[in-house]
Amino acid sequence: MAAAGSAVGLGNIWKFPYMTGEYGGGAFVLVYLITIAFVGFSVMVAEMLIGALGRKDTVGSFERLAPPDKKGWKYAGFMGFNGLIIMTFYSVVIGWIFYYLFKLSSALPTSTETAKATFDNLVANEPGVQIFWHTVATLIVTYIVYRGIKGGIEKINLILMPALMMILFGMLFYAFSLDGFSKAFSFMFEPDWSKLNSEAIVRAVGHSFFTLSLGMGAIMTYAASLPKHTSITQTAFIVTFMDTLIALVAGLVIYTFLFQEGAPAAQGPGLVFISLPVVLSNFGYIGTFLALLFFLALSFAGLTSAVSLVEPVVQYIIDRFDTTRLKAVLIAGSAYYIVGIGALLSYTKAWGETFSIAGKPLFDILEYTTDSILLPLGGLLIAVFVGYVLQKERVRSALAHEMGDRYFAVWRFSIRYVAPIALVFMMLNLMGVLKI
Ligand code: PFF
Picture 1 (cartoon, rainbow, N blue to C red):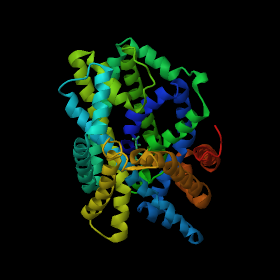
Picture 2: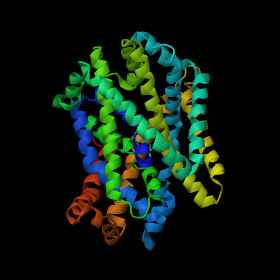
Picture 3: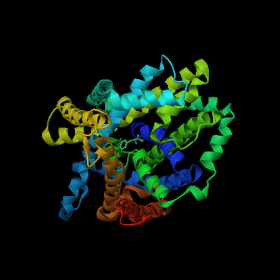
Picture 4: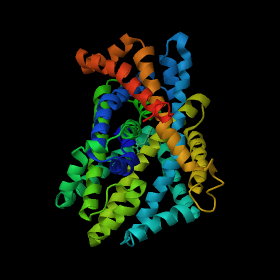
């Protein structure tokens, strides 16, 4: 449940729908689904395996599992620190969501102009408001992580995950009754191949890592405290399945509402913050209620993922420096909190230039670096480590009895060839080596 809480996040409800809109609907969805099935799921099993066999923080697990002459692999464990970089902007976005929850409870914007003005004004002119909500988000996440995996993280997931599912499925049932539903369905599931280009394919690979929380040790850290006889394959399957299901449901719900009002699909990252409230304002009180439910679900999803972004570093600090959980949480929390303020200031009018590098806002730099470079790199390291460095017999004895010999061979082929090739291809594209 905790791993599913990590995977299901802003990536599913905010990012997946707008990317689907940007990259042409059905064709993007199909490539994303294929990527999840052939790359994402295999890497999820591999990452869980490292955690379940290593049973330590990310650095410790790599170090323990690497053969004696390859102990340098422990440095791969520093992928856990990517979580703090992601948190710098993730916490800011959770802050925006809190702000929307607060703001929308009084009135929904009735035109796209007002909605856009509200969002743009928040981001460009209200650093104080944003810092306030970023602080609230940080305090909540810090408190949950401080309570630990058993006391805090597992409990909060046990409440928030089913609540999120209920809210989303409730909205899906409502969406069934609207005409927009059939349009949304064909938009998402009838591929228009002319819209698919290689950039969309590359983005689908990157997004599948982000959405499944792969490549930075979150899943590894959670797997380190899995009960000994839990099936890794089954757990990885459930997490992958739930994550994908929730992204698809969120997409269907959002597009039903949009198409119901004749709004366009390609609207970029503002899709949820700008368009959705306007569309829902047409439904009167039900609309306000749905908007609140929606942002509540989004904040739940964000919080449970945020917790998993901080936990790997906290584990590392506790294991390495023999310190208390409280101190470790405070160190990790302050680090991302401070840089996060820089990230949000980089979008403001007053401070934008100060917090930009080469004309690029710090927010975008942090997002791009993690999303498009560090997570795929982490995924590649995991695939190579499990596919080539870990002794085959060890891997086989952990997994073959769960999968059966045939599927084990398929998975191993995927982790040794399909995943590394797909990831290298993607990274070469990002570096501009391959022209697409
Ligand atoms: N999977 C989360 C989402 O979809 O929002 C984001 C995330 C969490 C990425 C944890 C990476 C991670 F390790």
